[in-house]
Length: 60
Image 1 (cartoon, rainbow, N blue to C red):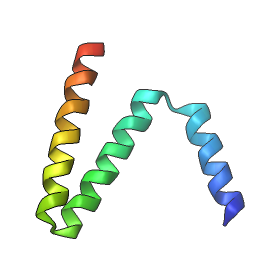
Image 2: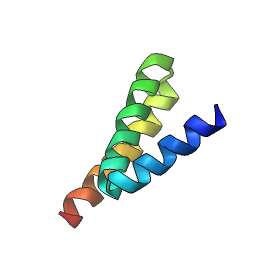
Image 3: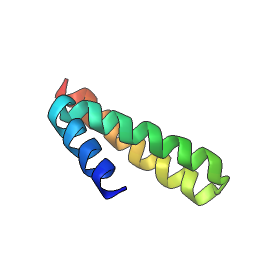
Image 4: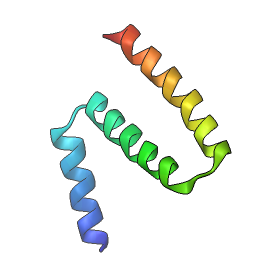
């Protein structure tokens, strides 16, 4: 299992840019938050996502 994780980490770092990795992580976190059905998680995700989306738009 450790070999697979190392390979995936190397592959992602080598072939994807920082913006792509950030978007993938945001999407995965969003799906995780939706499945937990916790109001606190939803609020935290919304605050972080709004800040990340705003900063991404400023950079572009």
